[in-house]
Image (cartoon, rainbow over all chains, first blue to last red; front, side, top):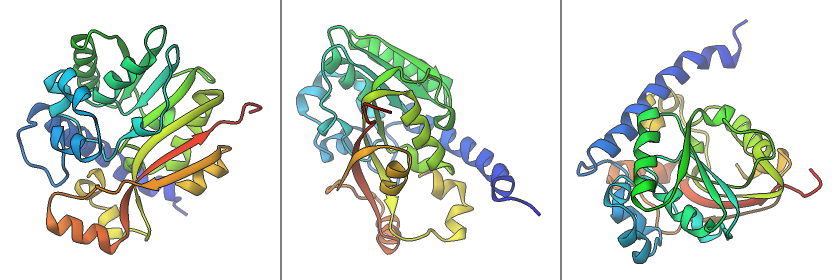
Length: 203
Length: 50
């Protein structure tokens, strides 16, 4: 008998490629139109302050592809260590780094090494520092109990193994640590045609 | 996801709908609404004793 994990493995690999392609496109061609809002228009829609968006490097703002505002309830404090799961072009990492300074730090995690490099450049241009680690959210590249806060914006829904992702967030948090995430959820089971279509799943 | 957070050991799980989230393309938004797709904001704590 073939298990669910075995049947989904090839699809998961295709999905990974589609996620890399789509979000690389947002980063490389932010002037394009996508079926989701992105860039400053999206950030303003979700309540990011104009002060943040004016202060952050234009490239980080233009490539923003979140689905909400995880900073609204994160209550970050100076000195805290924050892990940004799916750090993308780096806007959320930049905002987090402002909030945990002085003494804190932000660690980005992204599937795409080119995106990690771009995010680090944007954070540096904002006068801050971030270490971005290439990796997958189902196996977060961070030691257990090493961070105070996990933030994430529109990323966990992309995984076929959400329980594993959440267990990983729990593992890397210190006792007493917290998460502040925004993401897409569905009230109904998605049809198999959607599940089997990497373009739809990746969006 | 709310249930997964609780089952994974998180406490004080809270969620709220992101009120202004929508897809740009009308067809995508229509499909999303048909499936009850929405954006949510979630917070949760890892218990101090964990």
